[in-house]
Length: 258
Length: 287
Image (cartoon, rainbow over the protein chains, first blue to last red):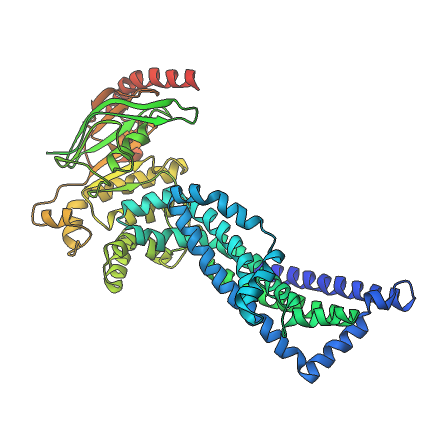
């Protein structure tokens, strides 16, 4: 009991500091612009960004774009994770395949994703799927490497013990390998989430008619820095909220950890 | 009847520099059904390798392994194995861990929970059924591992220094509990009607039951003498082989808290230590 109260106080302190840091940066920014040290043309100013955000919220233009970006990110995350986890598993369970395909995986991972965007536009069109594809190429590798590592990292003794207790190959995967890789998969989920949004937004930025990336690129096209910063703010807030949700899920799924 | 027979078993491992390391060299050993055999030797002498070969986790480079008279291929399905390290699944609670072997055998949830609870009561952990392994002490985790091994009721139990990580008092308690469980096996199996964990036991269900055959690996000679019917001494590695076998004729049931100071125990210890000491010295020269 006592320790949980102590950690509650500590959490409150952390939160207070987080608010303080944010407020401090915004206040400094606002002041520097007001004093004329920074030029609003280049960096806009917090009060105007806030005004723009509230206009977007009130007029409702924000929601459609946000929904599009989220849809693409979530689809990218799901498809990328599913592919990454299954291929990671396959590699970890068949070392021969892993050795043969290893250089190809490295080559593919080295391709800058921005280069792929025009290709995906060509293949999948201007709609959401070209963005989903871009998100998948980012999420896949993170999930793949972590799953591969997680499965290979599984404790030999746990595996031997389960086999001696009569586990079949499938039971071994289900009761030992997946749970043991889960820690790795989860830590990569946080990273993947950010990557999925990066993929979606970059895709939108390079060619689309909807989404936050589109909003930002439109604003940039008219030297509207306020619009650019407002778009970035929305992105940042969404990532913070969603990853808090993922953290909760992670804590629940990994509750067996001391 | 011979439960486990190793016939001139050798095991080599490839080393990273392209050579090979001879862990075991021509080890022949037969363990009668229902016997408690302890294998002692200096560290690094291939005791665990020997046990892994008996478990089917490793295949010998040469020689034969027979279990109940049949050549062993693949895993030894008549044995369970208690590891030196913690082998409980950290993401399953105590009850789920105890029932693990029953899950693998496909028993229904209600039945396996009932049997797991029965075993938790036997090892005195009923109150901890929904705890996770990380919330238990080292001794408690060993009790869970014992229950996990005994619940699937195979005729052979392989143990690889199971208590070596425990403090000396907890260790003595666990040794006592192990002997109590082992000596009560015959009655225990009758009170647990359904043994659905494999055809090997099913075939023998009608026959009068012997105690489990136990092969217990340890580096601690005291522990070996205190527990076993026979102590086997392995030489220092590489190329370990059996240098001595000595029956332990101490009466059972044994009081482990008194036993170690009795004259018979001390005599046995002295004569076995005379053999083991040389091997320990050799092993330290290599290290």
